[in-house]
Image (cartoon, rainbow, N blue to C red; front, side, top):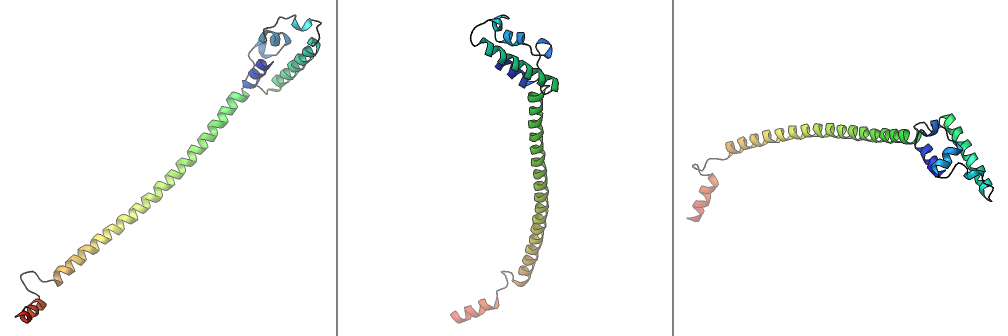
Length: 147
């Protein structure tokens, strides 16, 4: 019965015309067809359990509970969940890329402004500082005091 139950839970029951019978349960359990007809103690209870199992299994099949239920639906659900996570991660990465691209543009503008300021300061410095050929007035005063 465990084997038949596992087959039912894994999808469409493909044996004996997609219908569970007592003979099919006995065949899958590798027992003879006459096994449940014996008048031994415990066989009557087993016969009732098998009949109840067959009735429940056929009811599930009639209700359509087993049609590709576990394998297909579970895998599809897992794939949908995984796809949702991938899409979320992609959207987050795309947002981060956009933010970094904007930050890069700001830093580049700041760098260009800093380079421009440096060039202006160099120009001011060269205009204020005399060349080495022309001594600064302070140097002349320092030399006079030494002599």
